[in-house]
Structure formats: C-alpha cells, structure tokens
Image (tube, rainbow, N blue to C red; front, side, top):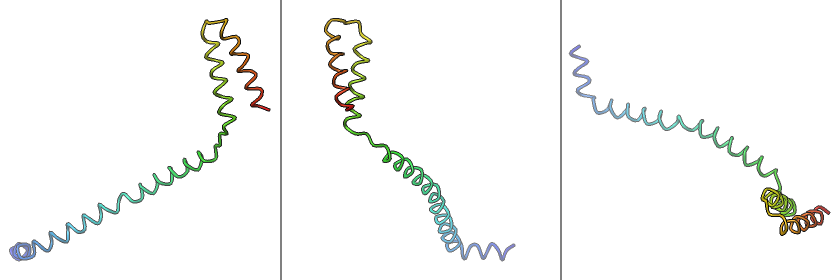
Length: 96
C-alpha cells in the first residue's frame, strides 16, 4: 500500500493530465452522431419543401378565394356583391 501511495505522489500530475485528455476526447466525440441525424432530418425536410412549387397564378387564385370568403363572412351586401362578381371573373381568367 505504501508503494502505491508513493507512486501516486510521484506521478500525480501525469495521471491527471492523461485522465483529462481521455475525458476531453470522450466528451467531444459523443455529439457527432446526434448532429448527423439532425442534419439528415433537416436535409430531408428541405428536399420535401423544394418539391412543392407554387406559381404566382396559383397564389393569386388562392388570394382571391380568401378575399371572397372574407367578403361572404361579413354582413355587408351592396358593395360586396359587385366585388364578388369581379373576383369570380378574375379567378376564371386566371384559371384559363
């Protein structure tokens, strides 16, 4: 037992440095696999989003449909009837 204590007292700094290096290497390498998984998930999401293409015509048609639903949900009648007919005409012209 005395020999072990003498050995520890003489080589304490070297043992400490080796253990710290070992701990540093273990802690740095652990997150790489989880980061790779996250990057793969994000890249698959980006790929799926890039396959969706919305043209300006489709966007304009959807905007007009939303405006028409908004007009229909309110109680104003006289001014909105003409706007609804104009929206229908614009939607039909865009769909052609």
